[in-house]
Image (cartoon, rainbow over all chains, first blue to last red; front, side):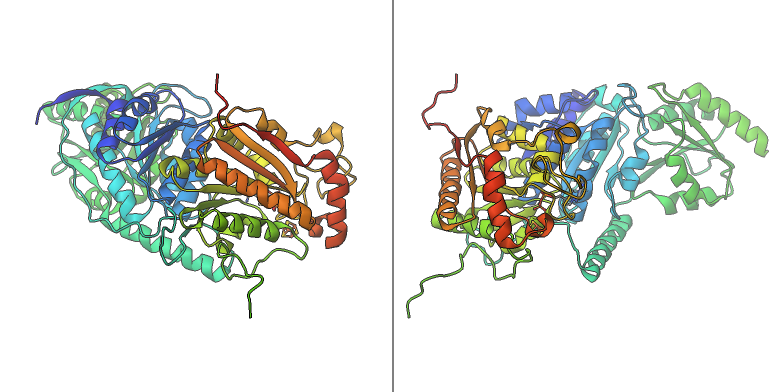
Length: 356
Length: 251
Ligand SMILES: Cc1ncc(C[n+]2csc(CCOP(=O)(O)OP(=O)(O)O)c2C)c(N)n1
Ligand code: SF4
C-alpha cells in the first residue's frame, strides 16, 4: 500500500472517520485543534455529526449522550481540557459506555505550556475522575501507530463498553510522517442492545445510568466492573521489547521519548554497550509481568526510565513492576524540552561503571 | 365498567419516591401523557438530572439516560444530533439547570438544539436537603441562608425562561405551574406545544414549571401550594414568554 504524508492530528481525525466514528464533539485547544478542524470539514461529508461544544465538560457529555444512544462517539483535547473531561469519563465508565478520547498532551501543571509533555500519565492511568474505574490507555510513539490505535480504540471500547484513551504527546500530533492506511485487527463485537436509542417497539426500556444507591447493588456493580478490568488486564496488555535479549542497560519509555531512545540504542550498541528498550504500549493495563520478568534476567544490570515529566510518573509503575530487582534511575524534562540521546548515553555509561 | 381514568402508558409501574405534596410526580405525569398523546413515546429518549428526579429513568417508560449534574443539555445534544427524528427531552431541577449547568443550557439554547427542556423550579436544592439555589427568593430561608436570601450575599434570583428567550435558537419558552386544575391544563398544553415545535424542527423549546418542595420549605403540601402561588408566581410570572412564529426568518 502506498505511503502518504500525514500530520498527526489530522491523521487521528481521518483514522476515526475510517473506523466508523459517527460523531465528534470537541473544543479548541493547542496542540490538538487540527482534530476538530479536520472533523468539522470531513465528518459531515462521511455522514457523521460534528459539534463544537461550549467546553470540554459539554463535549464529553455530548459523547455520553451519543454513546448511550449506541453511536461511535469521540472527543479530543489536550491536557487542561482533559482535566475538564474527567467527570464525564468516570460517568462513561460507571454507565459502561464505549467512547474514544484523544489526549494530545502538553506540559503542565495549570495552563503550563503548549509544548509537548507527558505529565498526564497519572491522570490517564489512575483515572482523574472519582471512583474505582479504569480506562484502556494506548500510547503510540509515531503517527502510524497513532492511526492504527485510533481505529482499534473504537473496537476495544465497544467490546468492553468502556472508554478508551489514546494518549499521545503534542509532538506526535504536530508532526508529519509517512503512514499507510493498513487494516487493523477487528474484534467480534456484541450488538448494542443496551442502547437508549428509543424503544421503537422494543419490549423493554433501556436506561443508561451510573447511580446505585443500594449498597449491595452498588458493590455488585463495582464487582462486575472489576471483573471486566481484570479481563482487559489479561487480554489487552501490550508492550514492545527492542534489543532486550542481551541488554545490560534497559531504558523504559513511551511515546516520543521511546523514539529518541531508539537512536540512543544505536549509538550505544555501536560503542559496544548493550542497551535495550522496554516500551509499554498500553499504559493501562501496564505490562507489569513482562517488565518484572525482564528486569529479573541476569544480563539486565540497570534501568533508566525516561519521560517528558520532571517528577516521573510512569516511574511509579516501573518501580512496582521491577520490585527492587535492579537499580532504577530517572531522566525527565518538562516544558517541551526533550530528553536527549546524549543524556541517555551518558547515563548508560555511568550506570555500567557503577554496577561493574 | 368504563375506564374513566388510567395511568399514562408513558409511566412505568414503579412507585414514585417523591415526598408527599411534591410536584415532581405531577410533572412526570404531564410529560408522559403529552408524549403518548402526540404519538412520540415509542421513539422518545429522555435525560434526567442529578437532583430529586435522578431516578426519573425508572418512572418514564421510554428510553432514558441519567446525566451528571447540570450536563443534561449536553447529553441531549449528543442524542438529538445523532437521532434527529426522535423526541428528546431533558428534565432538570433549578440547582441542576440554573446553577451548575448554566453553561450547558445556555449553549444548547443558543445552538437551537431541537430538544425540549422541562425545567422544574422549586426555588431550592431538594435532594441535598434544602440549600439555597440561584432561584431561591429574596428573604426565603434555606440551610445555607438561614435568615433568608439577601441581595448583598447572593444577588437577585435568576429568571431562566426570560434569559433563554433572548436567544434566537430558543423558539418557545413558557412558565407554568401545577397548583390547580386550570394551571395543570395550561402546563400540559405548554409541554405538548414544546414537543410539537421540537418535532417540527423549529429549535430549542423550554417549559419552566414552578414546583413545590414541602419538605425543604418546611410546609404542609397545601401551604406549599399557596406559598408558590403567592410568592414564586409573583417573582416568576406565569405565561408564554416566547413563541417564535414558525415562519420567522432568521436574519
Ligand atoms: C458535581 C456534583 N455536585 C454536587 C452534587 C450534589 N447534589 C445532588 S442533587 C443537588 C441539587 C439538586 O437540586 P435541584 O437541581 O434544585 O433539584 P431538586 O432536588 O430540587 O429537584 C446537588 C447539589 C452532585 N451530585 N454532583
Ligand atoms: S425533597 Fe423536595 S423536591 Fe425532593 S422529593 Fe421531597 S419535596 Fe420533592
